[in-house]
Length: 394
Ligand SMILES: [Zn+2]
Ligand SMILES: [Zn+2]
Image 1: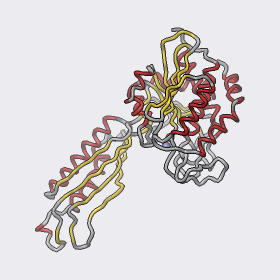
Image 2: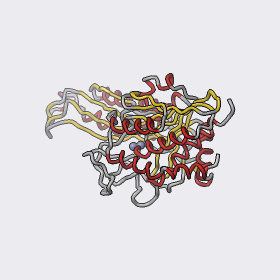
Image 3: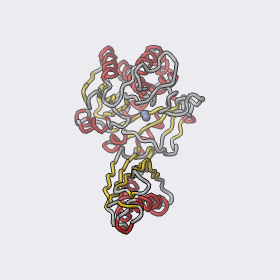
Image 4: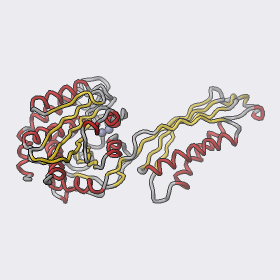
C-alpha cells in the first residue's frame, strides 16, 4: 500500500470533503433526529454508487463495499453523526445555524472522514472481503450504537471485528493514540431517596430524620473508593444534587441525592453498585428510615482487544509513522457507546489529534471545532485498517 498515493487521492477531494463537513457543522442534529445528516450521507453514497441500507436505529445507515478479491472476512468501521445540545460561540462562516445545537464533539468530521474512505475503497477495491461502514445516530447519550445492535446490525452485516475513530483535541494533527484493554470509562448515574416521617425540629425523638442517613451516606460512599476499590484500580464517585426540606424548623420526610460513578472495568462497576446500595440501605436502617435506590447503568467501559489494537497501531503507523502513534495511551474518564459494539465483536477505538493550539482545548466546549486538516489522516487511517484486516488471501 502506497500511503503517499492514497493521501494524494484523498487530497484531490479535499475541498469537497471540507465543504461537506462545514455543511454538517452548520446543520447539527441530535439524538435520533439526524434526518438531514443521514440524507446528506445517503446522497453521497448514491452519487458514488455505494450500496447503502437506511433506517437502522432510525437515522442510521450502513454502507457496504466489497473487495475485488475473494474473501470471507468482514469488518465494521463506525462513525457517529450526532451533535450536542449546546450553544456555539464560534463566529466563523460555518458556525451552527440551529439554535442551541452544535457539533461540539466533531462527529461532523467523523462522518466526513468515513465517507471519504468509503469513496476511495469503492474506487480502489483491491482487498479481500467486505467493509461495512456504520453511520451511527445518537452517540451523545442516546445509545445509538446499542440500538443498531438490537436492530440486528451484526446479523444483517456480519463482522469479524469493529473499529472506531474519535478526534482528540490537545494533541497535534497527524498523531494517533490508543491502548489495549480499558480505554474509556463507564458512565452510570444513580438516585437515592431517603424517606422517614419528618417532623418538628424541636422534637426529633418523635420522628425519623432523613438528614442523618443522608450525611452518613455521603461520607460512607467515599469509603468505597478508599477502602473497597483495589488501590491500583481507578474509580470516581461524585454527588451532583441533594434536595430536601422547605423550612429550617421542619425535618424533611424525604431527601433525594443523585450522582455519577465512573470506572474502567466491569468488575469494579459491579463493586461500586453493590457497595453504594449496601451503604444506602445500612445508613437508612440505622436511623429507622427507608431508602429507594435507582442505579442506572449508562454506557459500559470501552475495552479494546489486543490483536485488533495491534492492527490499529500498525494501520495508523502506515499513515503517519510509528513515531506518531502512542499505542499505550492512558485511559480517560469519558465514555462512548462504541463500547457496546466492542462487547459483541473484537476491535479497537483510536483517537486522532485535532490540534494542540489554544482553540483546540477540548470537545464539548462552545468554541470547539473539528480540525479540517485532520480529514485526510482520518480517511487514510480507515483505508489503512482495511489493508491490515482484509489484505490476506482467503
Ligand atoms: Zn462527545
Ligand atoms: Zn464524540
